[in-house]
Image 1 (cartoon, rainbow, N blue to C red):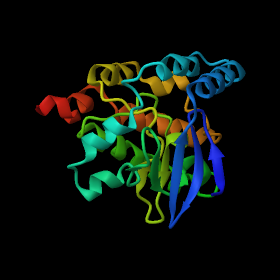
Image 2: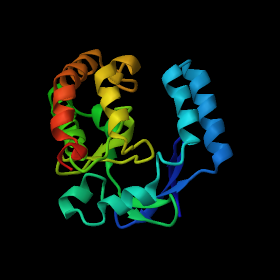
Image 3: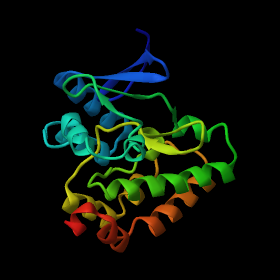
Length: 211
């Protein structure tokens, strides 16, 4: 099986039939990769990833799959039709990472995709899941029909209080939208996030608010 890539937490393989297999790295490998990345990037935000790895309640694929078990096909597509491959390993539809989409499309097309990402995150809130880092250029991808889905589920959390704090702090301003080289696109994304991710929109959309 051909390896397509490797991130801080997972190695990605071609599963065939437009699917990928994501195999979780061992704990020592994940810690080493996160530490090395944080040092190279000189980023406090990324160094927090080291602590996150040691928190079992976060990035638990079995828990995510259990919460999605009774959801609609449309909802499962928000997560690229994720399916268990055992433990924290999983398979998904093979879609184009946003960071790769951005380099081959116009500013207008890229802004439209960023708007769809805002819609995706707000939709995910309605089922009690969120990405507290908003690293959409790395964690999300786009289908051929233009719809956006969450590719990387390792960062997802179900802690509403924690997610609300990331919205209140506007975490995307702290990170500076890394991975988006075009300044106009980066500024447009910040405006979209500022308008779309607010304390009010989170309170109204979060699943826990209706339970």
